[in-house]
Amino acid sequence: MDTAALLLTLRLAGLTTLILLVLAVPLAYWLAFSRSRWKTPLQAVFALPIVLPPTVLGFYFLVALGPQTAFGRVVTHLLGHPLAFSFAGLVVGSIIYSFPFALQPLTSGFAATDRSLLEAAATLGSTPLDRMLRIVLPLSRGSLVSAAVLSFAHTVGEFGVVLMIGGNLPGVTRTLSISLYDQVQDFQYAQANWTALFLLGICLLALTLLYSRQRRSELV
Amino acid sequence: MSESENSPTTPSSLAPWLDLRVDHRFPGCHLQLECQLSAQRTVVFGPSGSGKSSLLRAIAGLLEPDDGRILLHGQAVWERRGRGQGHRRPTRVPAHKRRVGLVLQNPALFPHLRVRDNVAFALRGMAEDSRKEKVLELLRIVDALALVDRWPRDLSGGQQQRVAIARTLAASPAVLLLDEPFGALDAEASRQLSDNIYQWAKNQSVPVMMVTHNVEEAFSAGDEVLKMDCGRIAAQGPPHKVLSAERARLLGVLRACAD
Image 1 (spheres, each protein chain N blue to C red):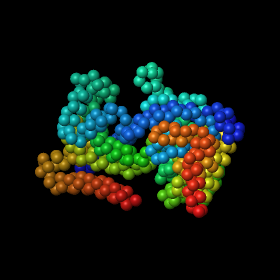
Image 2 (image 1 turned 90 degrees about the vertical axis):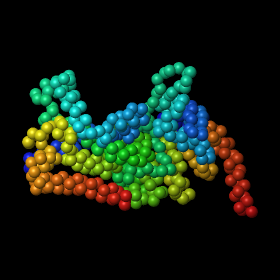
Image 3 (image 1 turned 120 degrees about the horizontal axis):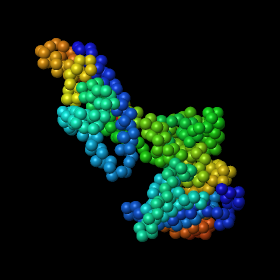
Image 4 (image 1 turned 180 degrees about the vertical axis):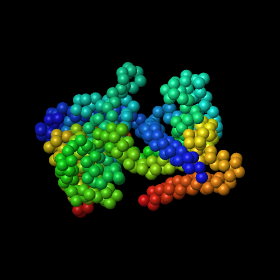
């Protein structure tokens, strides 16, 4: 197995999961409790990566960060290099592509919080932020784990977005799924088998973890 | 708040702690309420669906009426004018800033916190020793000292209600609203607990408003009664005047039983 690709994949998935949780928690909280009319259209936008072909996402990402757009020029100027075909670009792409996989379980988990608990906390002087930190988050631990596991597993399994945004640079943007593609192209079926088995194992482990948590919460 | 320093039996001589005019439509119900309350202990009496709980929720800031104003101790916490009455920006003090303690029939204890942490929920910022002491003091008031280390899931309904009351008192509310909080307790326990709460409220000069269906409770716990019917205040005054019909009916039943 391609060790460099394995380490890069784990680094990418870990970093993406961490950033996703930080970004998705406040947004999911807003989606779960807001009565804004913008909620539904925004929910549709955030869910787009579930149904959108990864190549479409990758294409727009390349266009947006290319030298043709002001945004792309600013990012290139700030970083000193274009975001496309770099590890940082891969992280940004993965965050966008895996966003709904973090957002959906968090939003459902937060929305399931018993409203009477939040009302009780409010009458005890607890601010909305305090209620999120002391009531909603502790009671949504299962959803946080689900969001983290799904984000991690989904990032590990990425192919289309990675190929479009990152290309295939060894040690920089070549992840395990790209490495598997290369191995098949080079007729290295034994190695490809190990890589595929590893990816399969990670996904199976993630789903087992997820369903065992769900089962435990059903039994409680 | 100097109300309770005077006699609680002469409510009309006190400044109102609540000045309310609320108009709110629910599906199948139109709440139209207007009242001023000065008594230290007010009982809200009326049949199910008459708007008692909605009144308490509006005061606590958990329900936003369509129109009206709510003043607590002379301060506007809610004000919104209906159509054709000007376009002044509505006043909206959120629930967490109103200092209104609300105990509902559903105790809503935080399931992930032990009893001691539930009661200490509003005591953040207090030194640990003082906080522990305060928690024990409040649990003593509601006769639930033995429950301090228990989890909410291990408590009976009545025990949960006691803890919920202690948790509310910990927040040092300026107004205390009780929505049938003794439903899971027997008559004797309920009387003892309400006595303790009223004593605490009197010591702290905190006006109390309690919803009840129970005529006996309304007589013993209310300096003033708001009798509600179909979303309106049907009568307001001392219990012997407002609840004379209910009292006569109850006495009739008791006499019939004795005969």
